[in-house]
Image 1 (cartoon, one colour):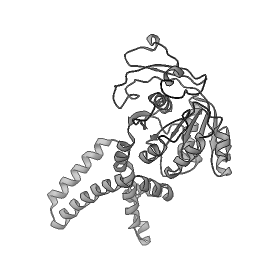
Image 2: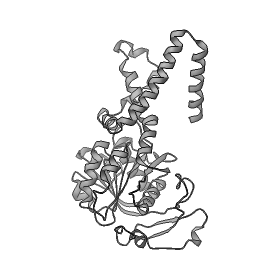
Image 3: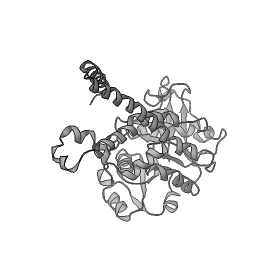
Image 4: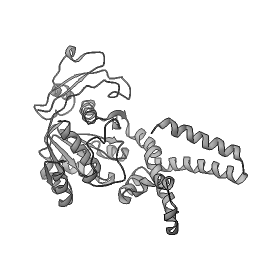
Length: 339
């Protein structure tokens, strides 16, 4: 039995009035998996940081968790879910048997399969951890074989294209809620999975006018159970923000790495290597991210171009005071972020 209990901050769990999860979800939507119960009592207008402010206090147990893509993110989800006792069984789906074998040997999954449709039909909760330009097709394929009440989410770095492309296209008995854990690194593969990867990190869960609110809450609960803080945003807001905080830094890092000639490699030290670290990420994955979030990335690139032009003008004019001002502004922002 997979059960999730949610209570408002104002009501201690012992005072919450219970209601069947299925009875709630039946209000205009197909029920989740038969036998799943949910006690639910929470205010609707508690702002964007519902989970972070304690509006959800969830206890989860998922019989079968499906993870599509068992690399760094998918592998870390599997490890975290198993070590925290959130699942009875983890099923991994991949495209290389060697990767699945390694994930099983590392204790990330209990079984692996190259057949997405056959393996996922037995899972109650599925997370897609594949490149963003593959997620929509994979979700559509999986949804056709999922049992009534299956919850689907993802870990993609873009949200608008994925979420909007899926709206109105899934069977009524299956629900998709977009997610993006702000965690990871430039490394790839299950060998880099970390059960504590999401601890204290922010995960964005998306909600639109078409999202079933009762499907959002267990997805929020899932990420919280892995150790994340959770912020609810609409997909477009997410993409504008992440263009500046994630996608632009990768683009800038890559642009900087490109200008380094081979004969200067041995003259690079911590500064250059730290600044260009993320440029070591998978080029195909990042090309897909840039393409899906192109308008927002271009807008963020305009911001960076304007900032660079300010530095250029100060340098060309020999204006030390302007340079000091620009550098001081940058230092204050970076200091505010912490370590």
